[in-house]
Figure 1 (spheres, one colour):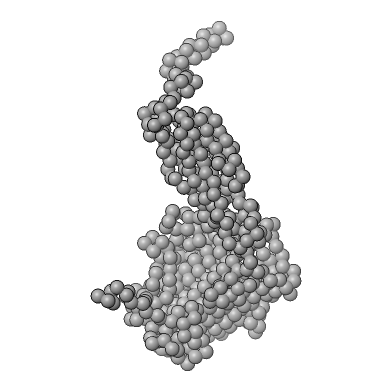
Figure 2 (tube, rainbow, N blue to C red):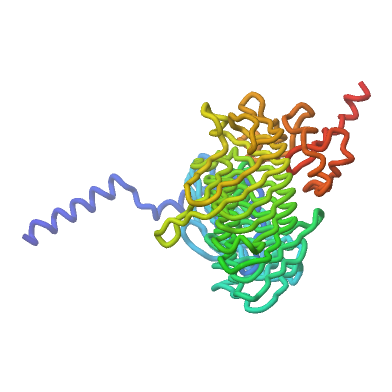
Length: 500
């Protein structure tokens, strides 16, 4: 058998040399013409802000040899020799210096780049630069590398807040895993602080959360991805499901969320079943938006909310199950497109399941000067559209909408007083409602003087909350007071158009 196999192998090897010339001879045909140059897919490879000590995502650019002859790249190197934190991979090899790498005529080659930035001790991002240098036939070419490094307070492996603790705004907070506030402890957040939450990271509050920003310096909870899914159109910061959510556990009371932005999580704020005789949460002048499941849900709790936008969720924008709730001058809107909607904008119920058993307890919910709107439309049945109700015998089911704009079919009765029932044709017109043309941005301020809700609020209620989320005085407005979280303010006239 061996006598047969060996001649066959030798024949195949000989045939291979005829059909596939050896690559070793390639270097003998490299052009030495210094006028032949490389081309690159970009002249600058820029990274979004990179958190210090945490490596960046991998980016890449292409080297092109658009010439009719192969070229030998005598040197490919990082200009800094690796001291800036950039790392490159060329033709499958890692390093910061490479010699004699060939590229065929009309061919291309990837260069992959990563960066890790060292802490700088400052709150402001630090620009880090480097370049990838190519030397071919003595001619030097380069691609610039840029990244901003941001110092952070880094929490890895979980953090438990055991005593009253202030989270300062001197540097952002990067949270891997989760922050847990123990029972009896208060987590206070300084105005202007930003929390970058990693995938699946949660804020779990057994004690108390005090998140109080200002109009000028709000507090922000958001995902930690700073790059784009679709270049220059859709950043991760406008994409739902980037982290977990904020959970107020059953023994958590006296929470305050004011001038706080909570966005792009799987959940927004979830208030778990507790005691509706004790105030669980005051939510004011805030925004909870763009989540893949529920934006705000509370069960058997006492919540007061005002001057707040809750918007764009795969599940309910607001779900209230049993308990005591008071919403004033709030905008509840759901026009999300990046995930599939599964629920109406506002759902009300006096029953829920806990530990496999159904619980029926009273619901008392009041809405004054609120907008409840969404892409489902008004529907064809009465009190359908963007409102859902689950009512069971055995407990009270009390609710009142006063001077609200609601996308549903309804009529005035003891539950709906001075309500504007709207549909697709008559609903409010907003400044921005997502989509690729708007780069998936939303702005739920009313866009025109004719929009439903402008000047239609109950002024006696507004007197208690005269200032809107952005600091506009509703009672001094020419068009007010306006229903919702935002007082209507007309766009300033274009000066050039005014002159004409």
